[in-house]
Amino acid sequence: MKLGQDILDYQSNLSEDEAAIGAALIKMISKALPQAEGKVWHGHPVWFIDGNPVVGYSLKKAGIEVLFWSGQSFNLEGLRAMGKFKAASLSVPALKSLDKTALTTWLGEAKEIQWDYQNLPKKRALVKRTKF
Image 1 (cartoon, rainbow, N blue to C red):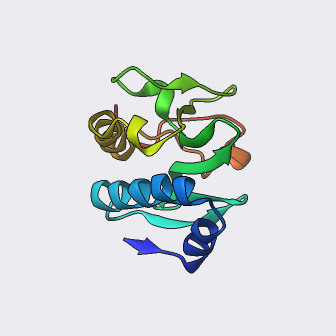
Image 2 (cartoon, rainbow, N blue to C red; image 1 turned 90 degrees about the horizontal axis):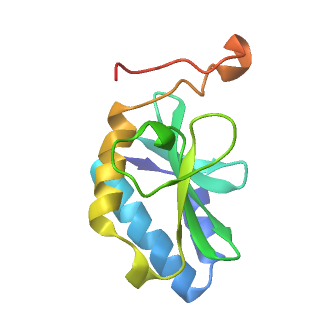
C-alpha cells in the first residue's frame, strides 16, 4: 500500500493517545486494503481504491472519528449514518475502545461495497461502483 508522507505529518501533529489510535488504524487499513492509496485529503488521512475514497479518519472533540464513505450499505451494524449520501462513521475515544474485529469486517466491506464518490460531481448522483 502506498502511504503518503502527508499522513505521517498528520500523525506527528496528534497527541500521544490520538497518534496511537491513528497508528493502529493505519496498520489495520494497510493490512485490509493493500491496494489502497493513502493521502491527506481535505485535511485528513483518506484511503482510495482506484481514485474512489473508501475510509479515512479525523480528529474530533470526542476522539478519532473513522469514516467509511459507503458505510451505510455495510452489513455489520455499529456505524453511525452521516450526511445525505452513504457515509457512516464511528468514534474511537481511546485505543482500548477500538473494536478491531468489527473494524476488520468493515474494512473488508469497504473493499467490496463502494458507491462512486469519485464521479459524484459529474453525475450529480451517487451510483454503485461495485456489484453488491
